[in-house]
Image 1 (cartoon, one colour):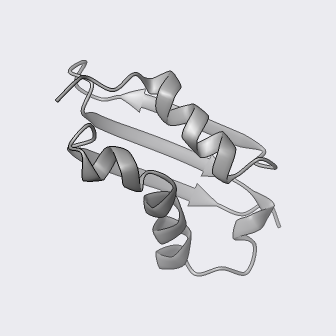
Image 2 (tube, helix red, strand yellow):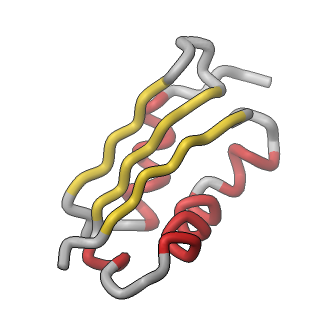
Length: 80
């Protein structure tokens, strides 16, 4: 399992949320597999928190599946 770069995660999130107002990715441990992401997007307006997080998890499904991401903390919010 190769370490994941925050920029690679950011690129995946930007593809899934192209109109996001803000996307932040933090490598929490420096090991390249524990991350915190923040996504602020109008796409999340009137969407439950669980569904917001589900959408982020779906955007990062490939690195989860191959083990590149071991742990992920998600913060999301709409813009409304």
